[in-house]
Image 1 (cartoon, helix red, strand yellow):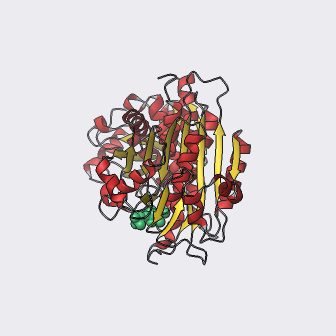
Image 2 (cartoon, rainbow, N blue to C red):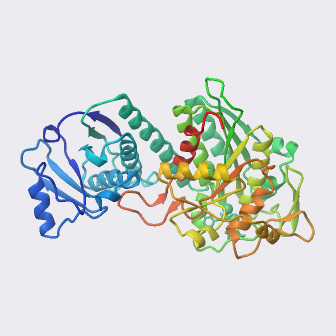
Amino acid sequence: MQLTLATTRAAEIETAAFAVLCFSDEAPGPGLAAGLVQELHTRGEFTGKALETAVVHRPAGMQAQRLLLIGCGEKAKFDASAMRRAGGVLVRALKPKGITSAAIRLKGNTLSPEMLSALAEGAILGDYEPDRYKTEKKNGSKPFESLTISIPAESAEMAEALRRGRTVAEAQNYTRTLVNEPGNLLTPLKMAAHARSLAEECGLQCEILDEPRMRQLGFGTLLGVSMGSAEPPVMIVLKYTPAAPPASSDHLALIGKGVTFDTGGISIKPADGMEKMKYDMAGAAAVLGAMRAIAELKPAIPVTAFAPCVENMPGHKAQRPGDIVTSYQGKTVEVLNTDAEGRLILADALTYAARQGCTHLVNAATLTGAIAVALGYVYAGVFSNNEDLQQRLLAASRAAGERMWPLPMDEDYKDLLKSAFADVANIGGRWGGSISAAKFLEEFVEGKPWVHLDIAGTAWLEEAKPFLAKGPTGLPVRTFVRLATDWPASL
Ligand code: BES
Ligand code: ZN
Ligand code: ZN
């Protein structure tokens, strides 16, 4: 999508559709189409409540062919998240009508670099359609061509805000494309191939640890999971190094669970809904997407991504409940349930990241169904062993408009993971399942400041929204990028 800044006055913009942001509690001013909006309002056809739209043809006194009114709710509550949604609504309201270009003017409370980034993000995210494998595309699936954003005066700051929004949203859509790939087509080896081309395109260093290498290193918990599959596992390592020598020794690790398909293994999942387990690599896809944006936005600190990728299958060599495996760190794990595989592959990845010299570890994983019981599909769960890093992560999530909520990590929860025969068990029982999973991961971070994001409830959208297609959301790409780019120069 072409996104262009202009300073043209609203009435003069020649466009197929001129979008107007309308608030529910503000009468349209004397300017543009005020009479029209007023009339729609009086007739109850358009009230300005959030996500509502209306189209008016041939608005008097304007060059635009039509007006698209976008409801934005109460004016005082209109923030960057609401702007992101409005951007998505703009694109998704027009595309089904075959309209793929539009213009909008930012003014008043909708005019700031942050708002501009959010608008660009929303439009690009709204444009994404998970229809790659439909040979007959539905009407309106053509990509949106251009959005002209008119502002009172151009500035380097606004141009940069636009670039940033575009970069981040395109990276997020890259992640969504990966997440939506079916398990037969996106195997661990394919993930590695994607990482390699990404590295080449963006100028990142890429290393792929293959099965023999991981065996040599002793990645016992990871390899145990992949035993049931004919697809070999990989550990993807992507490295970004800043051009200028960093001021501190901080080195951020982004780690993502990459189970390209999760059948549950021998502890097999019910058939109903199992098809969704292709998104069990959303964490890995998010770290790849984040690295893509990081390579472009060039934060001051080094960032390395680790994506352990496996397929969890009940093949004839599959690990059994009761098996005991030894992690890279040396701790033994009793595998009481082969469906709790994410934590097993992350255990080795976390230790590896810590031992590779990363000072701060942040991981994302579709780890537990229990997180959706706790927080629904709205908030991702945040777990940490370090208050300072957790606060920084939460600040990044707020700035990026991705909702995340901290959960407790008291030692009592660790007791749930007791094993009679090994150092630790891989499940902690039904209650507080997301927390015991997090406590399991904590065992392997080697005391490094660490945050775990459980995105099982938020990486996939069950029902389309007016601003976003059904399917992969691309969370938490924006938070990861923000965390890296906002990292304080020295602590
Ligand atoms: N990939 C699943 C978690 C999941 C569930 C992701 C639903 C997305 C939607 C994970 O590997 C898993 O199966 N976890 C088990 C853990 C249990 C066996 C302790 C779960 O949540 O049921
Ligand atoms: Zn599982
Ligand atoms: Zn899983």
